Image 1: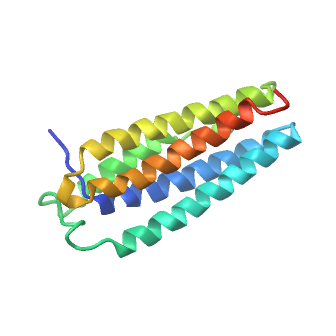
Image 2 (image 1 turned 90 degrees about the vertical axis):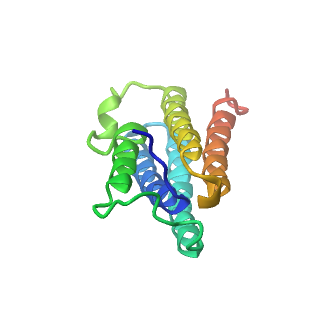
Length: 164
């Protein structure tokens, strides 16, 4: 079954993934021994929360033309599918992110894990973009994709910074 989504649905899911990401960053920062890495993670969490709010604002401003129902879906199953994908495959909300850490990771390993999660999110949104028709706001998905790319860039810059 081929799914198509409108940009409102994608932004709604983006809001959730940003909240999941912020929660992840804060939980890992709480466990992080390195103060600089902890600060980077907390700053990233703040950016994620800012993006969630920004995505919510964008979604509220989208036109009805960009957000038509993509199919007869009275139960909202398309959106539930997107949310499940975001919750299970981008930032798994059913698993404590700290369970992935042993406590002996270096700051570089923690940041590299964050980069990998951002890459997973980027791949998710690139795939979603292909499932949004042009008339349903496909171009606006690029806002989310660029935010993910910026996060990857920030984390990579941190990994290769002057102290590395």
